[in-house]
Length: 153
Image (tube, rainbow, N blue to C red; front, side, top):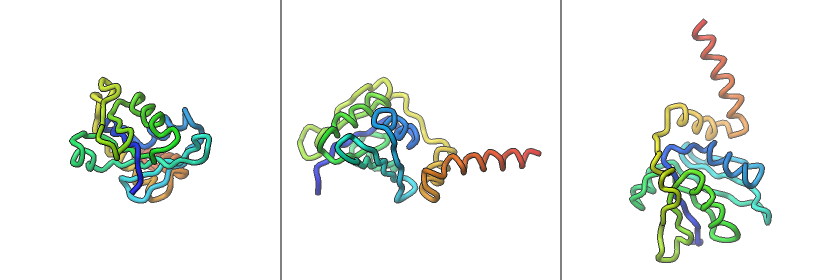
């Protein structure tokens, strides 16, 4: 078992919003998915690639009593800075080291309090990313919009 830095950010934050925030600060990102509710965002921190795990299951509320989107990053390099940045951007709770006894503390609670539920479209996009890969999301959504226009004609 490794040591991780973990965060729980505002419920309803999408994988695209998280990836865009990481991309804005660290450059190009790649999204992979092993399950429709579990993703990895791969990005370069400067010393090499990092992999941020993102879960949209309700386990963080069950395990920690904090509802939201669960994030985990190996505890080395700038892991605390990276997850602090995401908590500052979306609001949330940060646990700098999951092996110490300090636990989660809030960052930008006023943003965290603006939680929303995932829409059916958010869930559909997650399914597209899982089934077809993030690189095909925009193409798939464009085809979806084209199909909706055909249905109304």
